[in-house]
Length: 280
Picture 1: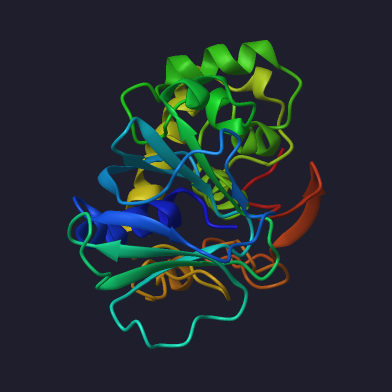
Picture 2 (picture 1 turned 45 degrees about the vertical axis):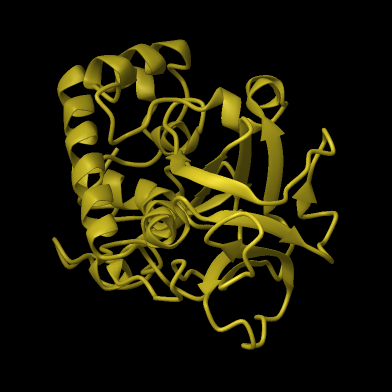
């Protein structure tokens, strides 16, 4: 699943192509992927901003509309100016892109998703605030001033027995982290993934904050992590996978102590760590 750095790079790659351009939804589209609870029109709507909140993209449109996208496991946006080019397999939604109302399309924004877990939801301002989905319950953005040791200490106090790996993955606490970056953050901080958050000091939370910011920023600079599906809006792969220390490396040597990396399951998620560097 694309995590914060991947979604941020998708946002950055699409913004130069789509800002101040006009979108028109083309038929057909897949009803499982495209959700329009208010049956709102999506024709010649101007893109005024593209924002990211956690793992969500928010295409801010005129007429008080928002196109909110969550890519889930295999969702992918592709921008192309070659209108004759074949669509990727499992393309479910296509938007025509034009420079102004009434002008012919010069490009397309295509959404493909082999597993169809992703969602594109068209909402107005009022619906965005009341619609029942994860967007409205997200926690602090880890690259924002709200993400502080004091914030994490307070959040941990509400669930003191939670394992720190589960805590980092809780989107109502920290928006945008997933399995890849949670494992890497814990390794960088030398914290065992099963440590209960109530036992972690504010000094350790400060390290978590610093390493989270460092690793996410480094991944964004390297265009995210690509193992199989992830591409940005221009079709480019990420490069951060070559810098990973533990994720996906169970059974291999720890790059810090040369011990063998172990794996366990926490909250149903595979977790890789070093039993020596990250002792309980």
